[in-house]
Image (cartoon, rainbow over all chains, first blue to last red; front, side, top):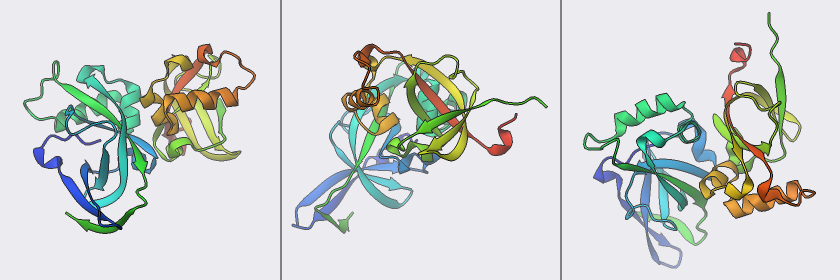
Length: 139
Length: 116
């Protein structure tokens, strides 16, 4: 789980495919692999609500710390108020009980975030294999 | 020393690789005797013991109410596909959409904590 609380977490990466078609993917940053969820085919991530950056169908480059992993597609999302997060979501997203998870979130949320009115988005990403791409990556 | 009953929780497939995680969910036929919060379960994959897990939380779930995010995190498939899978698993059930299931939230426990 990593909240995108800084604008520099919303970057893109350019990738050239084998047939020299340039792809531009958004980057999905992770500080660490909480409870091993990135080994799943489908995993969740809580983010500050941003419907421009998080669009269903868009492809993202998974970046764990400084390492680019595989690609994933946003397949589902749901907005949450901070206080509506339940035990299921907290454990599935982080492996932590709700109380610990909410305390953790509070350390990541920007000071301007209003817990009662502002929304978080639970994004569901599915890993995808882009067969046409090689490793010629230009950042 | 008080003995602890440990139930069996069998998986035929590691859906969404979820059994590698610390926390994971499972959709099971409604069984209020077997599924009680704080119960312990031996998690077995294809008959092989993997680890012990504790039931942290549960909900009643009818397949007609399965959302995409619930389905994806549980199985790696969307809601429609999960309902199809349940229909195949319980092929003698003619009304799978209205069948009562438990939606379980389980967390791995360290072996040293099993009897605590």
